[in-house]
Amino acid sequence: MSNDLFDSKLNELKSLKLFRNLHISESPNQSMQIIDGSQVINFCSNNYLGFANHERLKMAAIKAIHEFGVGSGSVRTINGNTSLHEMLDQKIAHFKHEKSAHHFQSGLNCNIGAIQAIAEEGDLIISDELNHASIIDGVRLSKAAKKIYKSCNPNHLEEVLKEHRKNYKNTFIITDGVFSMDGNIAPLPHIVELAEKFECFCYVDDAHGSGVLGKNGRGTIDHFNLHGKIDFIVGTLSKAIGSIGGYIAGSEETYSWLNHRARPLLFSTSLPPASVAASIEAITMLEESDEYSKTLWENTHFFQNKLKEEGFDINNTQTPITPVIIGDEAKAMLVSKKLLEIGVYASAILFPTVPKGKARIRFMVSAMHTKEQLEKTVEMLKIAIKHY
Image 1 (tube, rainbow, N blue to C red):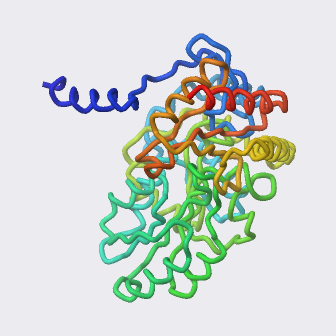
Image 2 (tube, rainbow, N blue to C red):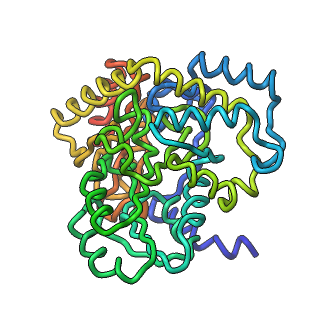
């Protein structure tokens, strides 16, 4: 029966040349990676700072395995809360300049767990139209009413607030800090101003800002100097931090409430000790030095300037996320495939992830890349696009 259920849908994807198989990596996540048996320049990773294969993180993880084993054995609220887990929460809170923090098994778990726990029936959630899928799912799980505002448009947000805020007890404005498809930064100062004016809570998912923006990679809130102005700061440990997990930073009351109501914390085993220890070490490294984020930004400016010199449309990115707009979806898939054949691994991003007609090749620049690799990639992109 399952064959009948999906056959026609899969055949449609194949006819549109949108069907894909998973690629297989055979090496650590780094700038040069073995994908499907071939060595390629890797632009498909969120490993912004190169921490995922850093020696210090690996040693911290190994040490944690020897001391605590490979698994925590339980949820945090029963028996899965080690001293390492407590240390990670404290480390995140200190790094983010917040009173408290609570980490989750993933960024997705964080959003779907936290949003349904903090917003209830009689409340209103107003969400940016281009927010990450994990926010969308979290909003759907909540019993609060939902409204959408045009992406990064404070004027439209204000219109929504004027029309609807008065009808609800609590209102939560939710936005990504950095948008993962276009690389643009949310206008947080304007959003905070509206949140204060209309007495709303502000919730920012800074997954792609943490480790990238702000002093020593403290994120978008630090970038705009908005400490103390954002009620709920979400981040991930699986991108710039190089490990796995997500977190929400804020008040001590938020921490306590999530302990009682966030379902991923109540019903899913806590992170393994190795991942927790690696995250602690990564944040320690960020606190010690800004060399990693400086290198990331040097590479970003170098690569994006080269692309613009060659006439490529990289939209309005403000971060290392570098979209090269192709337009046609089938062509974007073919260009991505050709790039892989000639030694560059960069994903095609298609509808419904981005609007129709805005298909792109997304390049995720990292501190790991060399200038030679970045220059070669621009040349390979020219070849791949001319091929089609």
